[in-house]
Amino acid sequence: MFPQRNRRERDKFEPAPAFLNYFDASGRADWLVRMHIEHVALIVDDYDDAIRFFVDLLGFELVEDSPALTNDGRRKRWVVVRPPDATTGLLLARADGERQDRAVGDQFAGRVGLFLRVEDFRASYERMRDAGVEFVDGPRQEPYGGVAVFLDIAGNRWDLLGPRPDAG
Image 1 (cartoon, one colour):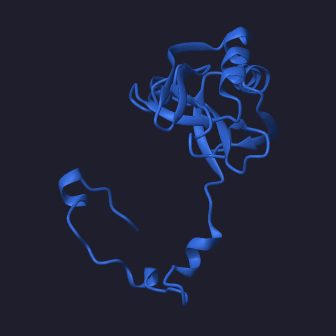
Image 2 (cartoon, rainbow, N blue to C red):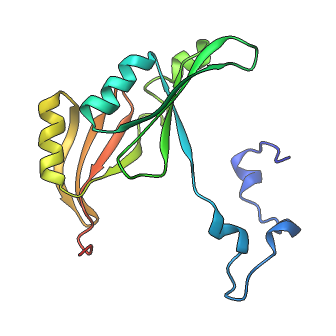
């Protein structure tokens, strides 16, 4: 439906498809109010090691761990974790094949790609550090709150973020 394009082609202006032109009385697209990101896939080496990291070290909830099948009928698991009271979860997907094996720990090309905001930055940082989470930068104060960069079980970089300074 949407062909892959190189950056130059993608950046050219194209009119929005007709189905995007439905707005409510406030001017907001009606369909926008009913969506959220359900899961973000994170490629890992091992389901159980990843579950232990996210549940035991970060304090996430194990939402689901169910048997499933790949598109070609091989066994896998459907594993979802998420922070308490969050709506978006991480789908922990075991690497399957050479390409995915290479992506483990490098899903964001060495950049911070995931952001975990917490209510008590100092306590969360100390608890995670004491539990064995590897921090590679910080903690420091930024205009958007306290921040410290840590690595997940696969080696992906995350920002641990404290409350926004304007949050009261």
